[in-house]
Every structure is written in C-alpha cells, then in structure tokens.
Image (cartoon, rainbow, N blue to C red; front, side, top):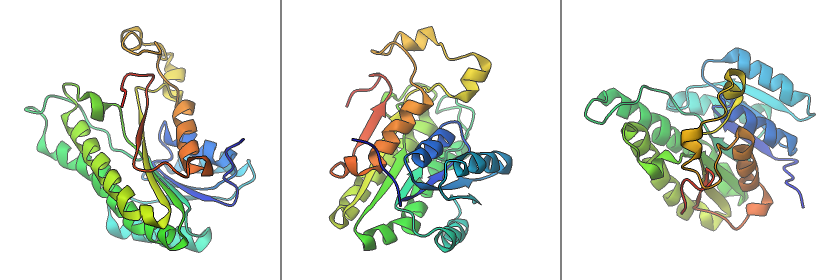
Length: 251
C-alpha cells in the first residue's frame, strides 16, 4: 500500500512557509503536480519550484493575496490555464502577529486573523470546490492548530479565528459530501521545522513534558498526515480535524 497521487494537481497555499514547503515537496514526491502559492517570498517560491521540478512533475509558482477575492480569481485562472483544475487544495497560509491578552490585543489583529483563517478559506472554497463537485471527487484540506483546542492565554485572536475555520470546514464537509468531495483539517502542535534545525532549537523540555509522546513533532509528520488525507486511502474520511501533536490534544 502506498500513497499515490499521480495524475493529481495539488495547490498548496502558504507553500513557502516552514510547514507549507514540506507539504508541497511531500505531495510532489507522491506523484502530484504542485501549485505553489506565495504572497511575498518569490525567491523561496522559485527555489521550491526548482526542487519539486527535479522530482519530475509539473510545478507552478503563483503570487497572490488569498484574502483578496480578485487575486484568488486571477490565481485560479492562471492555474487552470497552465495546469488544469486542482484535485487537491491544501490551505496552509496564515499571517503572523504579536500575541498578548485579549484585553490588550489590538482589534486589528482579530480582523487580520479572521481574514487569514476564515475569509481566505471561503475564497479558496468558492474558487476551487465547484470544479471538484462537477467531477465528483476532490480533497479540500485545511491546516488548523492545537491552539484552537487548548485555548491558552494570549492566543485569543489566533484560537478564535481557527475555531471559526473549524466550523466553516465542518459545514463545508456536509455541503459538498454528496458530490464525493472530502473536507478535512490537520491540527499540528508546536512543530520542529528547518528554522529550528538551523537554530538548534528542536528540543523544548518544558513543552515535551506536557506531551504524551514526550517530544515535538516534525514538519514531515504533519506533511504525512496531509498526504494521507489527500489520497484515496482517505476516501471515506470527511469533516474531521486530526490533531498531529503527540497527544497534547485528544478528540
């Protein structure tokens, strides 16, 4: 048994980020053609495209602000024209901000997180789900977070936006399920990425002490869960959010 994504087109938003890069590479290694969506980091997008291209599949890097309806529409047009309709969409993009208590958090940060976690997913759904519905197959996958379950202090803007995203995905799963399209989420914990490896910050004893598996997960382990949900092996799974966080969250 293997994860075979040959003849599939996978679009990964936020593909130049710490987790997005590994997801894009993993989907490509499973045989998928890959669309790399990025907002600003053109250099990293080109480097990633070159790396994925070396695996033998087709690859396309597209710059777009996916909180902007017109830019999402333009991205869709370019993707369909050059590669075709995506069979797999992985929504990984998220904006960063400085965390503090709800009473101190600037209201703009709540708006920013809503646009990043909820609005972008609505726009991506409107752009790419109709083609999947018409073909009666497809995978729509969102990257959530353990924070939406833990609701720790100072995570108010992030946790509330990700909880909104969770509700959106569960409703979508019911709405598009009759067409054979699955809608699922992966919720990573605090994950080891290339940035940690470069800075030698992989080990976090205080965090690990709270985790049943007693360690941080890796970017590859998150990408593995995404690849599984993107595959035919997950054909009868929809409407779920899978925590990939070593047991920090159990649902």
